[in-house]
Amino acid sequence: MARLRRMPRQLHAASGRPRRSYDQYCATARALDAVGDRWTLLIARELLAGPRRYTDLHADLPGVSTDMLASRLKDMEREGVAERRRLPAPAAATVYALTDRGRALLPVLDALAAWGGPALTDPGPTDAVRAHWFALPLRRLLGALPTGGATGLVDVRVDEGEFHVRVGALPVDECHEPYGDGPAPGGADTRLALSTTVCAALARGDLSLAEAVRRGEVRVHGTGEVAVLLGASTGPSGHRPG
Image 1 (cartoon, rainbow, N blue to C red):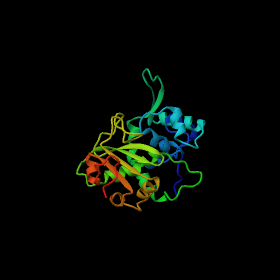
Image 2: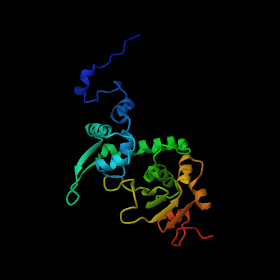
Image 3: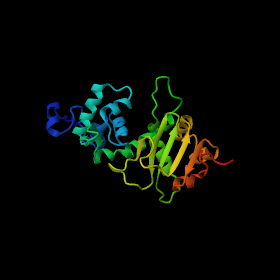
Image 4: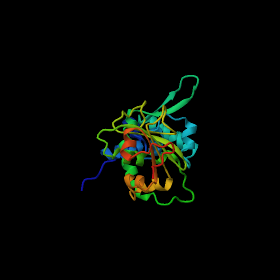
């Protein structure tokens, strides 16, 4: 049997690959060389919501040490996945943002969220929760509606707070993030309100969005195409008339 040749570790820098490379001539291995380290994809999840300051990233990644976060961001810059930017005055702050290569991770994170959804059983006593962590599964469900090309901005309120998602064939670039923390800048044309428990059931696949709306567990309000498809109330509270 032929012996496999491994690239000497001292040549990794010359090859442009990280020192922890798998040393496999395989597209999957190369991808994991770039983003397979612990925390990297979760940092990308945060940056898909838009440029973030280091302190904001650290606040929304509970459990990561400051040294680890700094190291991972440096790795992501080296791999061309993220970059540092200086915001103009009056903000005058340094932020991290995804590059085009980094934003191309969206379908990867979508697939991971769909695969991991069934594991969202009851949260453990030490589990942190952020509202916008539900953006990926809910955006996928809204995008699967029989919209016929409908687009829209959707504000979503759960127990932990509010986030917004873009639905349909909207451009996903640095000016049009697929989702974000808080209400949509400039306002959304659809608003949803639901509990964290229902949101988790939707992500697990235990409950369909249509059924949750019919049962009143998802309250819909607005005039956008998504709101109309879900059967929005016209009342100010967003509750369906009954």
